[in-house]
Length: 134
Image (cartoon, rainbow, N blue to C red; front, side, top):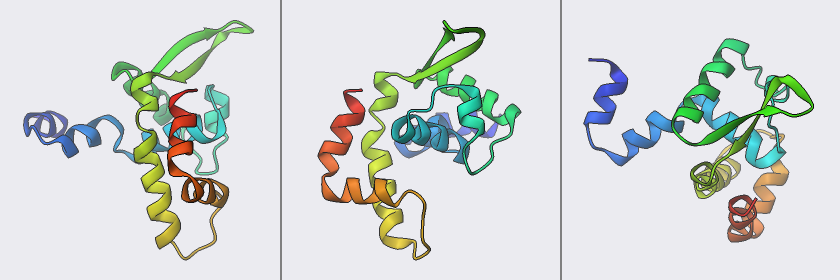
């Protein structure tokens, strides 16, 4: 039995969430969609963490299969796709907000997403609502 199937069989809500969005790359893709409005492969490949194209394709496929993102042909470039968060994906806004808050309060290094931390810290609910209503 695969590790993924063991996680699903456990019935644990944390294991379920980790199976959907718990790897580093999936959560960073979700972050980029929520915070920076990224929606195409080339935009995701430009993130500072440097995601490999094969990993990006795999994570986007997984997030689509799980109903976290949708995939549509780009009307301006029929060879490309546009990805968007679904309602299920936007419902992760409180999770992302809490990660931003926790990291901003515990990471002593200077960080590039400081404006996101300050925005969430100032008005967490407005941040979440903005993402959920997008």
